[in-house]
Image 1 (cartoon, rainbow, N blue to C red):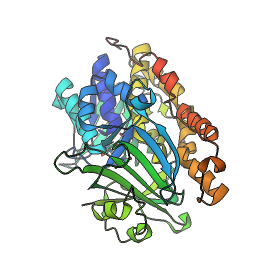
Image 2: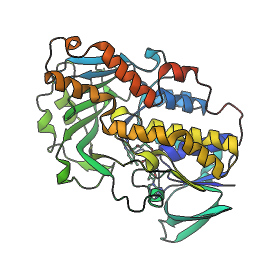
Image 3: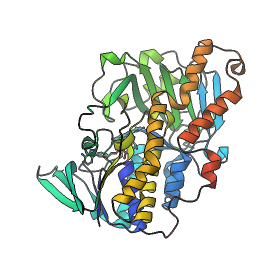
Length: 422
Ligand SMILES: Cc1cc2nc3c(=O)[nH]c(=O)nc-3n(C[C@H](O)[C@H](O)[C@H](O)COP(=O)(O)OP(=O)(O)OC[C@H]3O[C@@H](n4cnc5c(N)ncnc54)[C@H](O)[C@@H]3O)c2cc1C
């Protein structure tokens, strides 16, 4: 009855924890030979925090995350376009967290190993291909230490192997590389004085050139400074191409820092934050066209393998966690077999595919595009440019589409109630 999970990132580890909770045997097969805390900041929306809370991880998450208090859009000159409370400050029952991606991955990994045993996460095993019969699935992995191919039998296979998913290639063999729309992100962390509330998510600029900033650690009492995540983004002609997308490609800052040289807006000093980063990672912002199905018999996709999306709404990791929980729910309902996978797909495929396209269209920050269109980004009173009610209605629509509309979420029954087993 073993569920084979290809990929030990945020999605695969969340699924492992869920399967352990509901009593389903599983193994996670991860390509890298040791799981290390890679990446920089990400945000977890309350719909994902709720699920991690139900997995008994609230305290640990509280130790590594900063509960986001507000979400702010501002012009390149630093004039506020829109601000709204987030997480507990907005009235959600669960926080929104800003967190270091690598620390989150280690938290999930350590919790899984403690609960299920170290033999449940098999590192150094790269998924190669799979075949299935009416009664089971066989997945082949390359043992990266020896180069040997290892065939493992299971009841189901879940592809949680991220942006360049090999499991997805079985669903869309002609798909090719991810789609680049012209934006390039440079990501880093640096220490700086707290900005606004000290727990604010801030986006400055326009659709073509912007800077995202949020803290990922508490203020240090001795220095008054705080570790802050930043993302600088510029837009190029997509016809020129940018090379492959790799989350971990280190670069120097000279390609992009000059474009932000005069972006010290008083309350946020962009040039200092860029100069203060020890390491900077370059990532051409990519996604993939939605595919018709995430499930083929006994094989399913989840997380970025199913629906890699632009990070404009901060919901890639959140959706990966929700996927794991919905899949768990359906295993409880239908038992460990193809019917559970089909039900999982029916729950999520259509809405999340629409979200991928919505984020390609700039997601929640499309407001900045609208402000640019109406006044070129220059204004005295933003309410004359775009009435607050219009922005609020737009944001409410986005949250509903992304699964974190507050009233709905606060009133929802748990995805998996305590004690439920498959
Ligand atoms: C090193 C790294 C750094 C990242 N940094 C950021 C960041 O700073 N900001 C941000 O917004 N997002 C970042 N991401 C992406 C973010 O984690 C995902 O968008 C989101 O969390 C969805 O999670 P996922 O588990 O689907 O994908 P991922 O978290 O990408 O996990 C996929 C996992 O599958 C493994 N894998 C890949 N191919 C195979 C294979 N053939 N067989 C077995 N295992 C395989 C990978 O090593 C990885 O551990 C990063 C991803 C990675 C891998």
